[in-house]
Length: 458
Image (cartoon, rainbow, N blue to C red):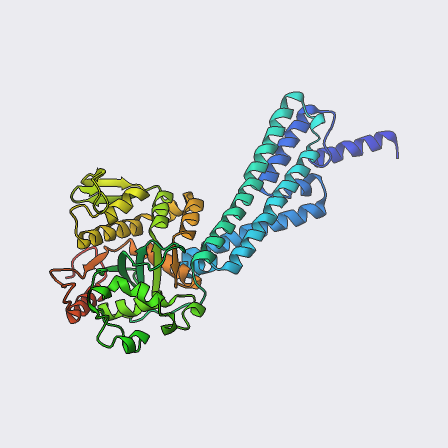
């Protein structure tokens, strides 16, 4: 083969494969090649290696990238077609472990392929004016690819730890009479507290199909609370919790803490004797079976509101801020208010010229506002703060396996007006309560609602 033939063959090879065999004597060609390699690598890690480096390594990296895209596409498709299943999978601890490991793998993959692509650029062969921009693009690529995947892996771990720290074990439970019921108890629930008395009690009944929510407010100073038949307390208090001023409903919690033997299986089932007792009592008061209980620490509640960026509440009348026997230190004005965690707590707990029943109404205002405003966009943008606040917020008997279903119902609930029932005077006398009437009020409130229509029926 002549020298002329060899030269011509090399020229043709460079012409047909300029990325793998560029003309290194032309700085402009090398600069354009560098931009192509780095740009393609940012979009599809491994593509630079396929075109200009190790094809074996390139095939592996591109295959891994396409696998990631396929998983994301399948997840989005499942979320669109079957949202409860998608959310249930997304909150499974094993799935979250696998997802975190996978995201760490992709963070490393992006880093390695980007650095390798940078070596393939052969920076010294490019024109001098292109070198700094190419190097800066590599830094940006690492931040976008590796940084994003690493951040997502960290957030996945934060979410997994928060879910595991708050929610109980167990499987998927069926609704009762087409509804799920959750008892919310608010108080100072720190481990160093003895004799806790729940300051706030709300029964949430959620339609298992539509997500429509009914909130039932229950006074903490309710007398003679009955218990559901078959409850361990039924044998001890056959006529209800009926020892007078020492047996207000809120006092049941510390009483059962002193008698944990009544619920020997509670801890093993992810609950506590006191929570099980409150479920039995509220079931007797309302006439419905209470499936789950959530004990909300009020300090953690304030942190959660701050993590959300505040909560908007319509205040009907000005509310003075003060504690028992203390001077007024401020006023929450009437009108639409964006409340911080501390302000929301004062609104829900202030006793200045207010009755317990006023406070109950305020507490329901806060709960309803949070239910409406804790939307997916808020969760995504403030995820870490919300997860950390939630981890300090509560103890609950809700199984982690139920989270996907409840998250789906929470989305649906925004399509309906929240129905509120307050079992308070004058309708229900807290000292001499008519529990048959209370049962009827709750039964009517949780009855199935007609589907909304855009036009009146003919």
